[in-house]
Length: 231
Image 1: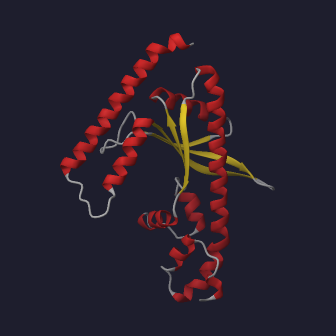
Image 2 (image 1 turned 180 degrees about the vertical axis):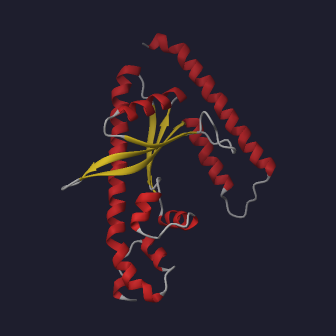
Image 3 (image 1 turned 180 degrees about the horizontal axis):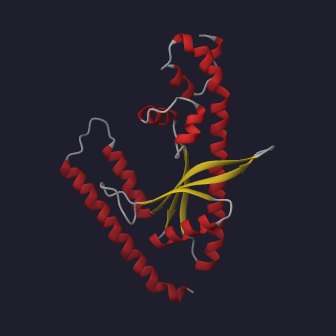
């Protein structure tokens, strides 16, 4: 193996496999360090966003006498998914292209107790003066055709490095427990190998999503009935 190809990330190996041998050495020097550096910045942005929600959950638990956030999950887009998305969008296979064109490299998923908590937390987050809203997609008010429901925000958040401040994009997904359960199971079913999703199965999945929506509404109605007694 060429000494230039040692110590590469999986993403770099995937990218290099798509290049001719004559392009390899130059491309390694072009992408190796910048890619690792960019992924480190995205990890820092995820940590900062997760900390923001942990602080909000602690503070709001005093006001609501309960925690509005059930759990917080983070993920960095996998090398395969990142590369395939760039190829699908016919984007240049460069580090600059990743940062400029892919909004969901870093993701934070906030699982809430109730739908009202989702909108409350989103509003509180966007009022913070260091958060910049890039894009908002409300799949709760307007579910996807397959039944998917969630509130998506693409935001920019600053990370403070030793010598500079840098704004990084993070996708924040807000879901209730039932939304997250449905989305996780639907993904496992839909993307299982050698399984064809017939129109009948697709309709069953949509029906389950509707049941989850009714469940969210009923649970929040019950919460609103008991809330006065708990304040």
